[in-house]
Length: 134
Image 1 (cartoon, one colour):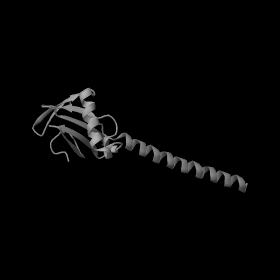
Image 2 (tube, helix red, strand yellow):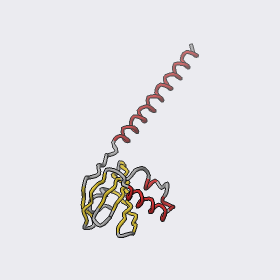
Image 3 (cartoon, rainbow, N blue to C red):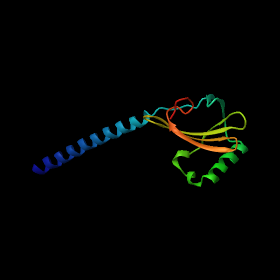
Image 4 (tube, rainbow, N blue to C red):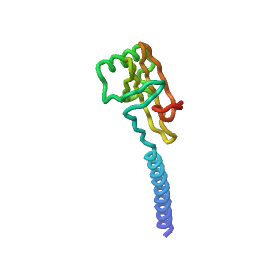
C-alpha cells in the first residue's frame, strides 16, 4: 500500500508540474502572438521629400544596395539588415531601404538611404515612416 501511495503521489506531482509548465508555455506563446504587425505605407513624407514604395528590387536598387555593403563590409550579416527590405524611391534618384522588426514595445527599424551619391545608415524605434521616429 505504501508503494501505491508513493507512485500515486509521484504521478500527481508529475501531472501538477506538467500543468504548470504547459500553462507557462501557453502564456509565453500568447505573449509572442501579441507582437503588433506593422504595415509599410504606399507613400510617406520625410525630410521634405515624398517617398513611394516599390514592389521589388530593380537592377539599380540591387546595385545601390550592393555598393553600400561593399563600402560597409561590417554591416553584412548584421541583424539590423536581415531579410529583404522595403524599398522606397524619392526624387532625384534617392532611395531608402527599410528593415522593420516588430516587438512587443513597437517597431525597431533600420534604413539605408542613398542620396546624391552618398549613403546614410539610420535606425530607431517607432514608426519609421513618420516624423519623430528615433
